[in-house]
Length: 253
Image: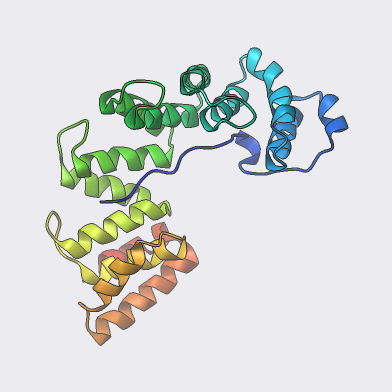
């Protein structure tokens, strides 16, 4: 099963993924934490990595977890610095110690991939669970995926299904794909082809290209009336989100 977690990238809690174009001269006079974080993100977008490092270094040295996380990401990816996984892990540990869920998630990913430390699902799961406790959807997905595959813990497809369902309704495409797979396959949960069709369609809209195969296969297993009802439920889900159409989804065959 080829479904992987998204890696957590650069962080600014109050302005997630927001890049504000600033001139270098503005970066040097930034006098607030938010300004410095924004300045670093803007520099990263322009691939001005040395400028980004300068914007975040003082904050990181002072213990700011988001700046520490971002520097860790630069070392992990080799952006403007020599790629050093062990240094990246150290920065992530500092950020995780400051309570940043994304840093715990990235530590988990590095352990399961064997980057910067010996490959260890047991260690990875420790960090995924810490991040999941803080509400990070990607880490909750990784825990569910491990229950599905049985790596680093006892395989339990029912717990995997429940975990995918929890993150499905939050609109997480990889979980929607996995849930559609399980519902279509019918090995570990009751086969519900119309539900699989809707979940796969929702995942596909978000760019999960593997879901197209599931959607097409599901469409071959439902009749015209079920297809029309599935399309109606899909329109509800697209309008209100999966959480808002969950009851209608559960009624699908």
